[in-house]
Length: 452
Image 1 (cartoon, rainbow, N blue to C red):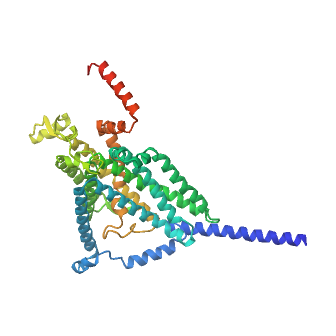
Image 2: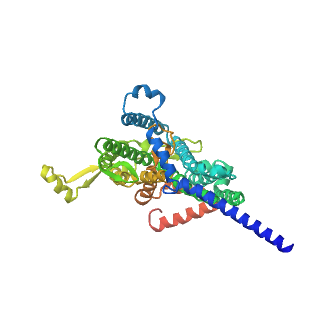
């Protein structure tokens, strides 16, 4: 009797263990088949690819189909891309007109759409398992990240607004503690949502969400930091990336023959080099033109009534200066009977020369990264939001590296302690600390003989 019962329990345990292993292996197999381009599902996926290649998807909008119906697919796609490129340029110009707050809203909208496009890719794997709180936690962590990063910006840049409202002062003072508390709530929710047999998939999603937050939210935060230093620090680099993308496409379309990188078979060396040359020229010209508008060059100063002051005396980097021409450049121009000794230009143009070189040589690797990402998941585009271009991530992938570079460049070579920023920080101090600081500063200046 006892031996029979023991045997039955042993058999039941083996069955449960086998079922558990099968569940684990099945869930991991499903995930690997979706994510691994070289998995055992290759034959099946190849069949799908061949089927799609036989019937290429037509991305032409309805209102353009009649006008483009007699064209070959290659030229039809060309005109669709050109049309919507011009639409995006017009929308970009409108946002510039409406100022910093419009830019902030646009950046946040693009960030949320990009996050949605990337998260939706993995959700195709997880939705079949009906795991609890998957999408809810993704969007909750996005909220936590935005609250932390943009709260930091508000505390630093909107000091005069914060001082005008007691409740805002409270949130500014305890901002980081509140941010930590919000994140811990999400962390606990994730732990409580763990389901037996699906632990690995859920931890995949947890890591995936944090990776996307690092790539998307951090970069959008840096973009807003850049534009608050002056709209020109967002507008010009963004225009350089757009210029490089457009002319790389045009040069590659008409002259491309030599493949550039296996991740993007349509990219060619001719397009890469042509885009770089046009970007450097464009960057120099557009920098000299836009630097004359204080609306673009002045740092954004937000007042308590939420108006933005964009009127200031131009910084030295936006004022023309005379430079001595280096010897090797003199030698280059000597055969042309041009005697260059000095040249007058804006320091900002020299800075933009460095930024344009980055935009044309390094920033495109953000696009290559996105191409590899799409190949890993066997998708053509992240979405079909923009006809002829794909999704928001497809269009703004190169801006990811650009935002980081410009922010680091500003911090290293441009940004200096500003009296306005220091004053905002001082006004956040207690009255006793302000008086103590005033006394110390007065004594220091008096010891230097600068004041009586």
